[in-house]
Image (cartoon, rainbow, N blue to C red):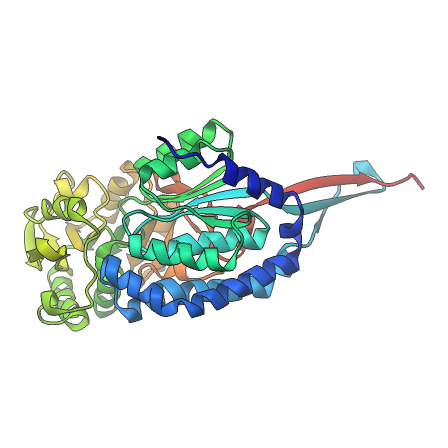
Length: 436
């Protein structure tokens, strides 16, 4: 028997129509209550992340809880300003008239979250829905049941279901929810599932934000600071065992610095994760058997520079760097989403740009160079969601930059004011005053 969420949706719509969520003070009160709930449940959240992914308490707090708390603080400092009607210019032809933009919530938001950062990527979009004045139904990932359970308990304890609800379940649950009419859908996950979400949304003409992924390139040019590059690429690639949507997917490196760089990267892996990573109790595990087997099949591509060790019984794959990779190799066909870094050397940057542009638009791109002309050439010729110069993944941690993809890596963005704007419709009003 298929699940039916019509009743839940109807109760949320009735609550939204009371107008309570449009009160900015109500939104502020909700966000403060969410902060208190997160602090109360902090230990349970961290324990759940350890159980689901073997995330250490330090990494779990930094990338999941601390990230969200920082985002809420920024939104609390600004939401009163964002929620005010804004005056717009009026053409002179209208004479004695005025123009205004009125921000208003869409209504009911459905948020479908992934498993790789199961708390952060569920709650961060929820914050956007709340601060914009919406009700929300949150569907966490079934692949991280411990975190999903804590999240459901935390929300149920602090918020009425007709305002914010967490619905747990398998893929069939998402399918059943998508049959209902929501006013906005926010999805984070794979490109393949994103197409399913968009197709379901089209039946109700529901607007969507799709935070997807793709093969995000990392370019190390011949003039790069190799010590800095090795440290920041190692951290960005292998944190969370590479299970990060904006992790560098593959490395493009100038052949004149490749050997030196790879030696430095081997040193960085040892420094960050230990001489024998398999004995590091805090190295994140692969999420399940299917992904473990998929990733393991790539380990015979090219030449192993470092890593390659696996332990199937505990879903462990060591940080692995593969040299002598060709564009046609299996590891280069789809997003890796694991602790495996393929390396392709280049001599001509123009050829590299052409190769990237031929592929689907990536979610992120990273460039290490000290040459502003090289920087401008790459930024001016490659379309991608966002990225960093001389760093990796840090662009998603600032509330001042909206985060999102383009093309097959997604549509729409969030974080900071971007979160408010995503869940807000700006109603345009032209008012003609009485002629003088």
